[in-house]
Image 1 (cartoon, rainbow, N blue to C red):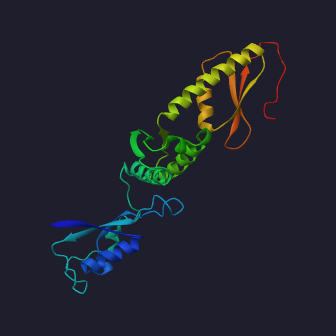
Image 2 (image 1 turned 45 degrees about the vertical axis):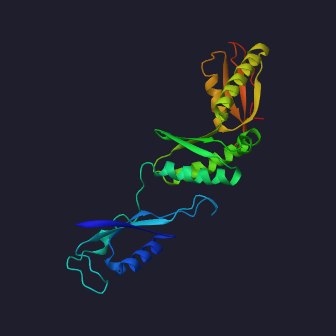
Image 3 (image 1 turned 30 degrees about the vertical axis):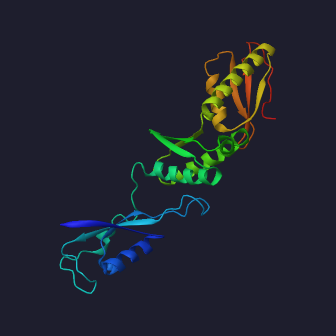
Amino acid sequence: MSSDLEFKGKTVEKAVEAACQQLEIKEENLKYDVVSHGSTGIFGLVGTRKAKIQVYISENQPDSGNAPVADEQPVEQFKRSEKGFVDPTDAAICGQEALQKIVDCITEDGQIITEENGKRIFYNIKGGKPGILIGKRGQTLEAIQYIVEKVVNRKSKERVRVSIDVGGYLANKKQNLENLAERTAQKAKKNGRPATIGQLNAHDRRIVHLALKNDSDVITKSVGDGFLRKLVVLPKKRRGNQKRHNYNK
């Protein structure tokens, strides 16, 4: 018969030390797995997590580290999970905890609703002050999403896409971008010249690209460098028209 106990500390070493002190066992006789190595969080301010170990206690475990162990086995066998393991939902939970702490620093009464769909995690922020969380042109929300996505992917073996919405902002923004894409395409086709949508992030550019994907009269192209780029909608040239434009200027 055996039972398991969990111990926490700022580091794995601290958690092991706490277990040894409480159970009065020498470290070399302690049987444990590393559940989590912990995290210092985001800039040391939010998302901090303590290291956690799971200690295995058997009935023939000695009461003191000074007593011999009859069925002693190599210590390495009891540290087989030194690299730790992650629960399938741990990445989403870790992201939610980090997001909640960020929201709490910005506004009061903000609550997080989490949904998982394959390799995507959706966080929806309810309550609080949406305007402050979203920021000018959504820049605050983009920054929050960037940080939370980094937190989530530190806990996941495979790439996970993260989306954070506040009061339906993303749905409204998507609809506005699709309407803008359609107006810009009509302008390009009417004038027979490229029409430009100024500086969008990668997510917003993708919405425009997809919105015009099935329009056989135009093509879309992102130009420029950096995080924010312009998106150009070009009318398809008729056969025989050899004039070219340099859209990368």
